[in-house]
Each structure stands twice: as C-alpha cells, then as structure tokens.
Length: 66
Image: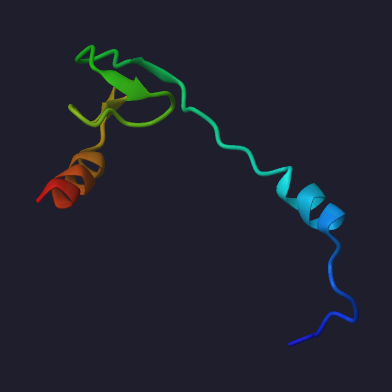
C-alpha cells in the first residue's frame, strides 16, 4: 500500500468531509394501500410499486422483523 509523504492538513481534511451530506428520503402515499412509503420504492406494507406486486420486498421485511 502506498504511504503518504506528508501529513494531510486540517484544512484538507475538512474540505474532504464537507461534501458528506445526510438526506431525508421523500415519503409519499402508496397508490394501492395508502400507507406512507419511500418514493420510487416498493411499499413495505403491501409490496406494490407502479401497479405491480413485488413479493421480494415483503420477504426482506419479514426476515428483518423475525
């Protein structure tokens, strides 16, 4: 592995870390059941997205809660 020749300055460290941003996901109503769901993702309660059912989304939820 390569070794840096010089120590990274505090200014450079802060500049690098300044680009990290936490975001709040957009929440919308599910068109099938009306429960709140993350936009552009399958609904956690019914497994529907864009008029189709995705059973894999429900399987993942069941594994986490069990």
